[in-house]
Length: 488
Image (cartoon, rainbow, N blue to C red; front, side, top):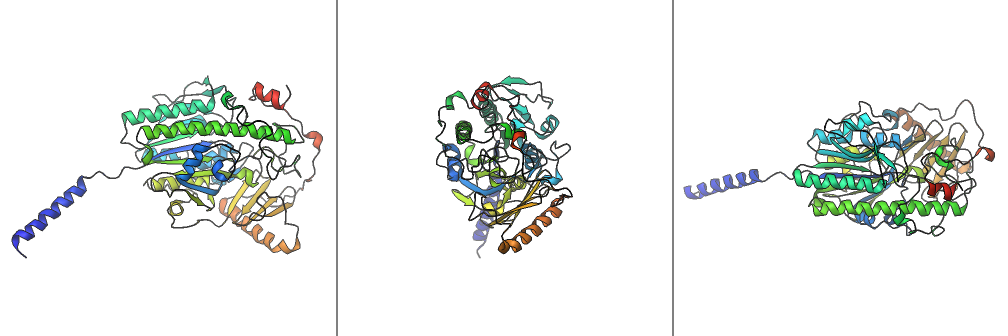
């Protein structure tokens, strides 16, 4: 080889090497996490619901991947949102983390540790001190489970990282959106090269089901069909018939009341959809959209007339299954995943998608291989629990619900009976399936640290006295609700 040619090759190699070193490393994606409150998985247009208007979230689903089998694991008490959010933020399962998150390493802490600017607004039902420990910035933070949407008490995180005294603002959905917009615009102007983790936790469609006035007439009463598993009364006492949520309409649940509730519920969601559109528009205007992972989820579902119930204090699909959409860089577009996934899997999944080390000592599974199409699912079953009263396990096809205090079992074929109406547990030909799923349930209990017995020493009756079911409002219900549903 001639000397000058060899010199040329060496020079070219040095130039290419220097060029590759001078290119900045691809920036890590921003994370925008949007969490709704009490939204059923089927309360979205993209979920096949033709009656609700959610064009922004539907478009987000087309731009990303929607999980059709996403779940919350359950709760220790009636306020399911507290353990749900604790699991989400910690990556730990129901029996390994407590509501208040005291001294627990959280998802925003993990992102902050690895160079992200973290911001939170909206509902935080896990203690003020843990919000202060989790986020670097916070504005219009609501500490609690629910409030009147027109009088939401919110606090700001000061320069010392402490939440100040509450001030009352309205309307909750607008308040939290405006706070997020201020953060996104401020960040784009002051530090656009640094990735952010922005968490917006809305308080809708949780009751009070009192929509913004602009949305009151969007769904006239009586126009929303009843759920396919509507009942006027619960078929039996599942263990918590008098929990707060069940007082929001009278017994029996009339078709008129349930349809009116659904009209208000859908109006809350459509208003939310509109405000999410404003947030996404801000990302695009600031040039942040293409490099932002966007998550849309809810903390739990809701009955609203299904099985004669109103709340989420049960283990039916309408209460434990939640919407979950992930969109952004590297996420396949317009894709459905039937993978069985928990909300607490999002902590390691988002860390992986953002190029961060996976957090240690968690129960959540990194679902980035599912999102990338490398695997179809990571789990073959899911376990859910409510208080000491109910346990359940499901596979792709089957679901078993056990009521230890009633010595009662339900078995459903979810493919043939998605509304969970036909209990097969008493059929002799299904005895082997009941035994199989009961064993699977016991294995889940052992793995999860759940020590509850599947049959209690004292067995309570399935029957209940209807005269004990008395409707009464809580202090957060505004005049609109008191007049419409309580006749006050």
